[in-house]
Amino acid sequence: MQLDLPKWFDLHTHFRQGPAVPAYIQAHIDMGCAGVLAMPNTKPPIARVTGEPDAESWTIERYLNELKANGADVFEQVIVPLYLTRNTTPAMIADGAESGLLRACKYYPPHGTTNSEHGVPMKEFLDGDILRAMEENNLVLCIHGEQHALPGEDYLAANRNAEAIFYRETMPRLLEAHPNLRIVCEHITTAEAARFVRKAPDRVGATITPQHLLYTLGHLIQGLKYHLYCLPVVKFDDDRDFLRDAATSAGQSKFFAGTDSAPHTTKATECGCAAGCFTGGCAPQLYAMAFEESRIDLSSKSGRESFERFLCLNGPAFYGFPASTERFGLERSPCKTEVLETADGNVTPLPSGLNLDLTWSLR
Image 1 (cartoon, rainbow, N blue to C red):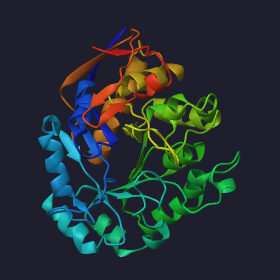
Image 2: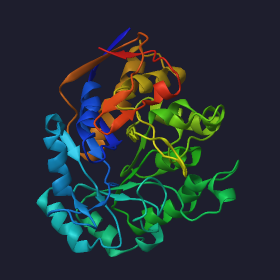
Image 3: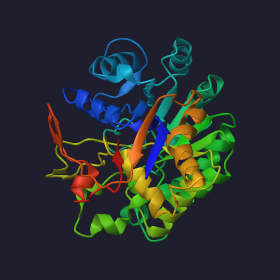
Image 4: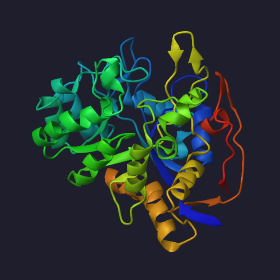
């Protein structure tokens, strides 16, 4: 079986900084990617729009130039969100939007994931001038949707977790306070989040990663497969079922691809495990596997349309740019992923870390 598809857009990925960046970008090019949204949780964070970097922050302008100089100039779209910090101002938002460099902003809960220590509790932004400036300038708010500063028993339990609490308690207040704000609920992992996005206005969409469509907490814990450790962490089978239904439902327009691919040359450290699954080079194959595990027949017209909608069409439509007119192909044949060699060291793709052979390959 072969699939001929428009090139797709990864609307949540990490390219980091330094000498390994060309390898990370090339891995995306190699898997038929037409464009990217590159996360701003660098060191220091991308917390200003223009100008040269300093000890406290990088800028969107400088990071875009760095990415393009390292191979990203071939992409049709490169979006770098502004990292929202306590130093963000309404004037920064307005001026950035007018310049054309600022198209989205990123909310991180404090200490919620890698390099998120500059994040601010959402309650400090609610009904405030920063989000109002974003509304006025038609910018997208990209949200890491987890409640911060929870005790361990609330962070991840059988009947509650940080993401579910955030979507139950905080997101309704955000929608009410900012009725015109465009929002992407990034890398959702729970039934609670999927239900929320489905019921929300059309200005709310969501990305889903391949690992959250394929795996559960049991896969992570059984043998402690740390290459599957990401944040938000994979959840339970009923959560995965809700995500699969959201991604594969006929005609859906709210859910789309965002891999959260996050390379680490050292995954296990003395103080814990680095958060992030690297799916550069293999994300479309993993998404195809997830659709088949969701009982979608990709050889059928309806199955192909459902897959193309999620992978290639919904994301561009939500962000307001055209789908790619260029094509790439997948075929149903087994293949292996190889360790990615970079100038900073080796990075293990998720399938290799799980000792998994892919059932789909690029062509």
